[in-house]
Length: 468
Image (cartoon, rainbow, N blue to C red; front, side, top):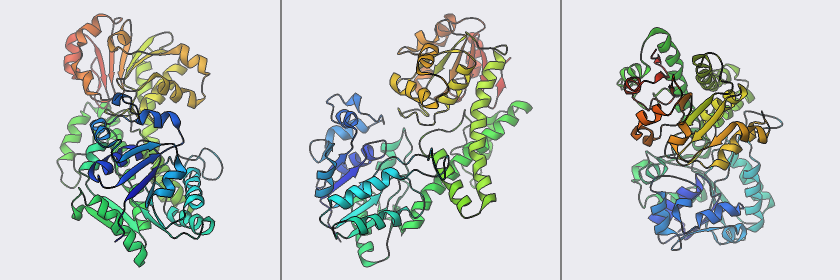
């Protein structure tokens, strides 16, 4: 088995940074270099103030503090890291295409190709290349084709090692994974590469939890896992609409069916809709793959999961407008939360973005408080939509660093992220400084609606309807 002494990870984002930090902590005899062309991001990873790490994950700061400078390094010198590495992880962004063939569904692999070409140009010795980014099936063959035909006669082995991290619990997911999946070639060289990567994870992961497959099964397993999880969220959200109409309580329905061992309780919490970098992107990728094979019925089935998700976001903002007497023009709406879920500063595909866009189109004034998301990210999310000018976004939406100030003189509060701290607020104090009647729209089922009603709020919660 090849003994790995040096690892390079191309991409210092939400996957690359935490994954490499844990590998470095658990494998002190391996030098791990995380490289990225984004100088500001690398500077943040190297900052002495660990609260400024570009990725917020509970427990990550302690791991970085332990390993950084010992065997964990962050750098913009990509070529040097590639040259020195025995194993190279590719962990760059693979967003949904916004142009050309497959626009709006297929994964954009331009960054993957650029990585492959750079590895091929720099490498002078045999390398193991590991796909860590979420990729469509058979991407490994494209990477290998580039490496084998544009390199320096170097032999490459391509492995698929998809991440199954949930943002907010990424560190625990890495330390105690449900499983680690490694896909590789069936040749002797391929098996040797698989064992090399398996040996790294075996430093802290029980061997029975390290699964090996062929490359294609590994790549498809990642898309399938996210598609199944997202489908559950959209399914319970579809039931939330019926609950509101019939007087049922979606949380009680979810609990009842979640106790069925054939279904289980996870991902049965109704909300404004799922977000994050994976679910929608991966489902649309799956839709594109199905369409490319002429499987239109399969494509339509999975596309409906995304349709349901968008419907839920729009339904939430529509309920705010209709409850506030069919107009929010000139009214102040406070958003508690902008991240797509608690315990992360990631805002990609957050439900808050679409809800805010809808309300801003109704000429509402929005003030946002999120404990971890910075102002620049919030404005960048809105500017990316191109539905208003940057000046309009900044005049209609303000970011606050104090939740009580954000709620002052507000007509309504919309809870868009399930941050635990929201449960600890002095809600009576908040209510006293709001305009009356004061409304709360709990899109994440965070608040005790009965307690909110005792204070005087008019409450609305997904799947339960209005209290009045």
